[in-house]
Amino acid sequence: MFTLTIRVILVIFSLIASAYFYSKEDFANMSMMLIAGGLFIYGYFKYGTVYAAFQQMKKDNIEKAEELISKIKKPDRLNKGHKSYYYFTTGIIALEKKEFEKSHSDLTQALNIGLRTENDKSIVLLNLANIELLKKNYNEAIEYIKKVRKLDLKPLVESETNRIEKEINVAQQRV
Image 1: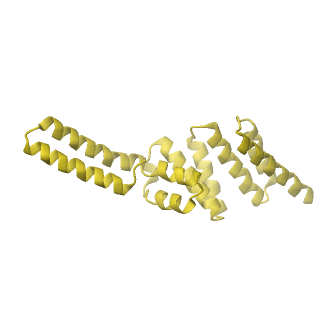
Image 2: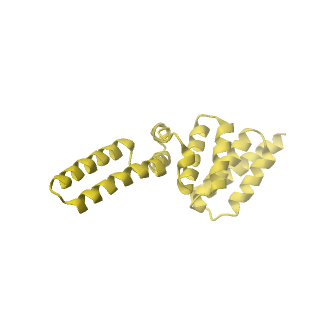
Image 3: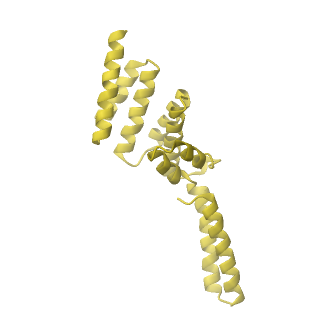
């Protein structure tokens, strides 16, 4: 949620405040400020900038999302929920760059780890179907579309599912 810069500022503020409370012999508040600083540091390593990157991706600001997600050096240290959205975000970024293998791998990993909402699952499955369509693996694309249809779809996802399904049918008729 917080970027690295904001976290550093908050940790510095916590350290300064704890030094102030120490000088006033207010050890309870000093301890609280040290704990707060420790939690900001812990939060950075446990949650990273995944949420901020995901929000930028949802706003179609792929460059900013990529910048934020690239700040995470060890995604394996993220908690399960954030790790799935890390791979979701990197998969969409790779798809935008036309890196289909990486995108397929990351989106599959996000799906396997588990996403919070059915809408997010449907978006991942739809993107996987689109990748398979682009790779001309029509049977795989149809399988992903079938999985998408089993979920409760929002209108935008429904229309995109219909569009991709039509593209698959047209492409299969050409073959």
